[in-house]
Image (cartoon, rainbow, N blue to C red):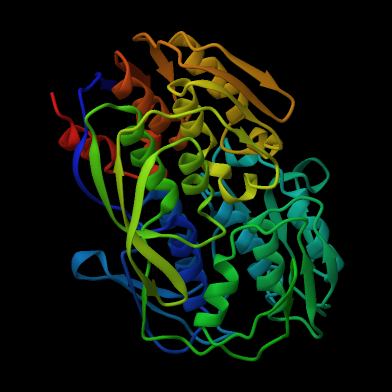
Amino acid sequence: MKVTGTTGLKGTVNIPGDKSISHRSIMLAGLADTPVKITNFLHAADCWSTIDCMRALRVRVEQGDAGVLTVTGNGFYGLREPHEVLDAGNSGTTIRLMTGLLGVQPFFSVMTGDASLRKRPMARVITPLARMGINVKGREQSRYAPLAILAAEQIQGIEYDMPVASAQVKSAILLAALFANSPTIVTEPMPSRDHTERMFETFGIPVKREGNSIIIEPVQKVDAPEQIDVPGDISSAAFWLVAASIIPNSQLVLVNVGINPTRTGILDILTQMGADITVTNERWSGREPVADIIVRSAKLQGVTIGAEIIPRLIDEIPVLTVAALFAEGQTIVTGAEELRVKETDRLKAVVLELGKMGAAIDETADGLIINGPQKLNFASCNSHHDHRMAMALAVAGAAAQGVEIEEPDCVKISYPDFFSILAALRQE
């Protein structure tokens, strides 16, 4: 995939559905006994992995006009033993959250994923689930998938202090907690995205919050809404926010963007850098806040991105690194060691691939140091099968002298139409 430099980006972008919320909407709807319509669902590879898993558990998922899904479960205890191995594909959200949900079921199941997913750490999920009485066995002393999940017997509520803020680990525990025999308290070192808690409330499940602790009581059923409208994914919007900021003569209107405060670190950091961003038409989509965002080109300044904000923009670091290359002064990223266990080691991949374009980026144990502005040249770069790397490279190429991206199809994981939308927004 070749992306050439452009003199500006203009237009309106309807942001595709939030990946995190799309996953959770299918899982919770699958525990209900009434149909749930889901609009603006993200029809991307990761989310279809969750659909395929839920279908294998006898949940009915039907696609109607305009991509609207109708999910019909068999009740809170209605999941059934799958006849085949469940495949999470490339989706860390699918395998980690489903492990919590499957671990409390009275049947045996096996989960796996693609080669990349089978290298991602699972012990961080298995350890707290084991304390709840859930029996999961994995490869290399239960560190990696494939996972064998044994039939549950007695599930205990626990109090768990998470060593690292992780929405996936937290969510796996909270899903299991619904089936426990006593309350569960999960305490985070700092807040991670709270889509699971908000989705619980949408399904009538009480959620109690005390500081950084979430308290969940066991339930016997869920009360499903008739419809869930999935907000646009701010992690997908991030590529347009950065592209329009660093490419002169740009103005984009981003429609229906989720602005959940546990996800808006990208807006905070870009604003600190001097970006021209206007949030307008704020409203609610169920329990999730949404808005439209106008972004115009601006001169950016380097900033320090510390550990306290990383959970709110963990997926945006690759494209923020591109922004830093076009900013005046130094940008420092710390506390981002979690990026080393994503689809790829994103810290190493960012340094390697942007380095091919001439970028000089210092890699540290837990982050990056970027001195800007820098001139980027045309180069052939590899996505490392990482959708966010591919899109960050495309933004860098569009803002500079172009880029040839090897293995670009990985964008189907979260944003299948990304390259066609980029082409439509270009001002030659």
